Image 1 (tube, rainbow, N blue to C red):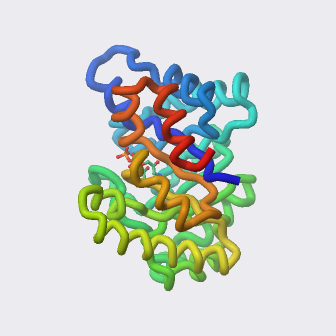
Image 2 (tube, rainbow, N blue to C red; image 1 turned 60 degrees about the horizontal axis):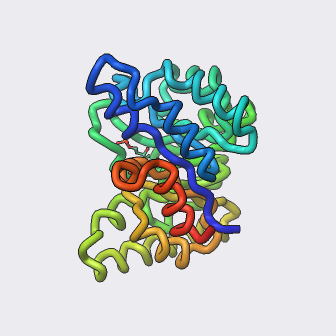
Length: 246
Ligand SMILES: CC(=O)[C@@H](O)[C@H](O)COP(=O)(O)O
Ligand SMILES: NCC(=O)COP(=O)(O)O
């Protein structure tokens, strides 16, 4: 099966938050994305709520439950007690844990699975007990994946920022792609499923899914929202699904 597409709504929310007005509608754009064939919606609610707000979550949960019951809700974030309570309240199908500092502009690295195993293992155990699939944000480093498996994760999400960053340097992008590929190979061999995300766009998806044919899901926000300004959300979802191999 080709790689599934989860549309990250953080960039839509950031645009909405420029004014004290309800547009663009996060739920409305999520509805268009799912109607166009996206497999899920992702949000990354940060403590300052500068992107998706906590108040967006019940509407998005209801959108999926009432109108798109086959779609998945993925909530990403750093596992503070507040974040875990938010997840438990809104019951996403997948929780992606990201080692973000609240002051960080955006996510820019994965977990150090060896050093942070003692912190992550009980969190993952609690989430799994709650019935959530758990994915851990991971740097492209094959050496870390067995520790991620031992922590109890179902999946890792490969941090593709450096790959996406080399959009105009194919040689450097190729080297990053190989690191991502080797990490995915090691993770799959260790029994993990593999997601990917950060700075993915229509142009860099086909080489990624070719190198990692078993890539389960990509979550895409910034580049997809930029594309939607030009092509509309439905047209953009069609473009990204095609780039994923659908
Ligand atoms: C984990 C990851 O890479 C994404 O969730 C990313 O953090 C979204 O970033 P923004 O919140 O900057 O849209
Ligand atoms: N998990 C990555 C994600 O959801 C989207 O990241 P980006 O496309 O906004 O860089």
